[in-house]
Image (tube, rainbow, N blue to C red; front, top):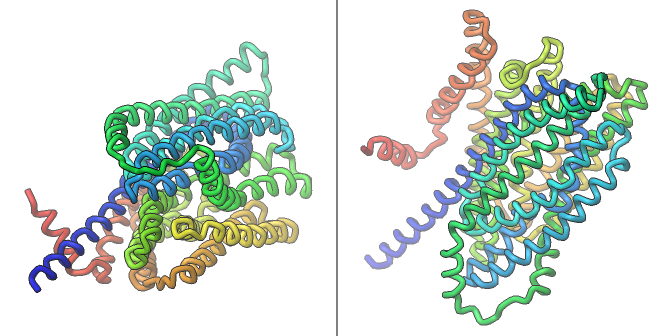
Length: 551
């Protein structure tokens, strides 16, 4: 009897360690992702000062189409490679895992080269505004480099190690920021001094091209970093391969088929999932401008504020859910393959609960402090600040929907329902496109029509994916702690931070100081409310207290 209790205790201890590990790995990756995105936001202000709203508009147009080619060719590689390799590692097939890794490298080199060629040669077909064409062509080589980087990241993620991905992400973004600003400045000087281009229009194009060089330079730095880290672990990898006694070694022909059949659903799901932004860009910057007879430069400037500032800020809280999905995918895939459904459901529940705990207060904060947050991160005129702040308020709710739908897409892929997110994304895409067109035609909302359509798209994806997870594995979501308590705490927090912001602003007349102090106070208030509302169990609080008292 005593032995049974001990075995049960050991098993519970292991389960707790596994739970803590997924949270820890997701935490490492989410911190790196958030740091990367904050760096990405901070450099936008000096970049905008260099190339202006028009240059930012050209950059955003080109970046949108670069992104869609990247999604189709290379973006989903880390997740797909992580899933396939983790399944082999789970059964100790280290030789086959490494052969899949090498096969994936060959695959991305081929597909990355094709993607780069398509973007370079097809730039004129993608956009009507010829000013964005040279910017798109500068982006082209980055697709190939990103694919190779993605394979290495996926390989480490399969080993449940997010440190390598995290370090490379942060260095990639730092390099991106530095090179983008420097290259944009020197390219504009080149346009003025060498090309004798005096017009603001042409200088904006050259500046946007410089910024695109920065994106490619950042990815290259990320690749160099992860190659260095891989080289450090190479001896350990070789040792495990040598000790592997697996008799059935996979052939590269089979591996190629395996990669294609695994990657394709990931690619389609991710491409359709992100196709919304491409369609919205096309609708507003091309079709809407012609339909309403608005000058293309004016539309491009507005789009630069919407996409380059408001939409970019909303990606920060979504970074946590993306990190959680990345950390969870190999673990859930392994558990499903081992038919451990109970443990898989526990990991899914924990992931959803943690994601909502972060994303809900972020959405409230973005809504309540929209203009001050824009002002903190970007340099705008008072008119542009008001406009961008309105856009951010309109998009704030979408962050919660995107966070949950991103996580559920990864859950569906992890449990083998790889086609379901594709179908759900297609349904939501059709609905959002119809709504966007109707609103653009029948109202004077302008770009707010795109904000409404974006929120609708994320909301539909959220509902469809959540229902699909429930149906696939008979999963029952716990609502009180996952949604209701964070929502109540976040709403009270929202009132508090608004009062704190207005009070400090009256005393200091500094929007930046006021918003920073308001955000810090909001974090304290939110945590206090979670404790008061009994979000944390007594056991969890005791653990925190014991850890806090250790010397």
